[in-house]
Image 1 (cartoon, rainbow, N blue to C red):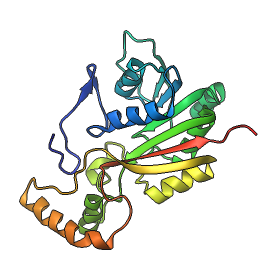
Image 2: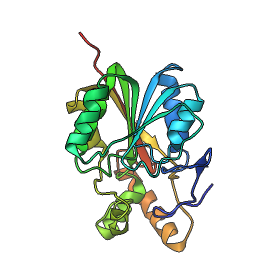
Image 3: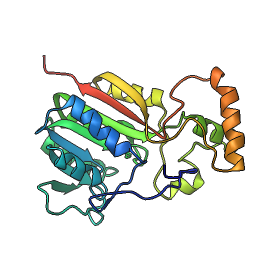
Length: 243
């Protein structure tokens, strides 16, 4: 297992493309999509980065469109994947893209993006509009309720992945599971499920500090509820079908 310690981890790649997500998260996302959508379905990767997830889904038989704010970072070639540049924080730019592609996709993915945007409510509503009636919306974000994040907040007053050094990386919006469910529900999605993802193990024994924190976690666990494990969470919901 790659060592992960307070946000530092070994870089991973898919087909030479940097995976900007926790270890194993893209594999879990692909498994969810395989369960929820047939091969040949149209998938939108709304925040594609270099295109690692887009390439993975394309290789598994999906028709993929990739979108990102930074077109200079996008690295896909040799695959029939359409790319479009959209600034998620530019209201007019985002609305223009949505109006041109409304209700076109069977699956709309927002993977490790919502914590970066200035208006998470508008972002989720946009994802919902882009999905076909009955289509799937899939969102991932760092798990602010994990046992490690809770202890980090107890010690430092900051959530894991949202400490001062993470702000320059763009983590500006810690979204708790209950808030994400609320946003999705009020955006008109149904059948919402939220579950742990990523590789945060039940305990860490990588240093003396982590041994102490791990024992604290064991003591506190009987008194805690919610999604305690998982570096991230995956949230899925369906757009309501037309009457």
